[in-house]
Length: 135
Image (cartoon, rainbow, N blue to C red):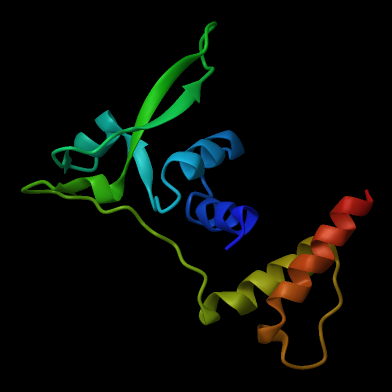
């Protein structure tokens, strides 16, 4: 798998993270699925840190001075005893394709395909990318 394809696989799992964080996470743990700070993993999610994991270093530019912050992948934690919250790991399935295509058509004024529309999600995404690149 190419580096670009590998990065896109990481980015699709970590779609809520900003690009810079996706990039740093991919460079350190390309297989990460859901990352959160130590405090978030421990308190609201009620997960405990497994022995021996290494945090994933990210740049924190929120203050006046850049510093490192660390996150853990969910695979580096284990469930607490009670009130455990598991991260929602969204995955694109066949049932999601029709609503996504509909949203793309409506948002970007794309004409509907004649047949086999559910199998043409890639074509719709490519059409949107071409349209955005032409702007």
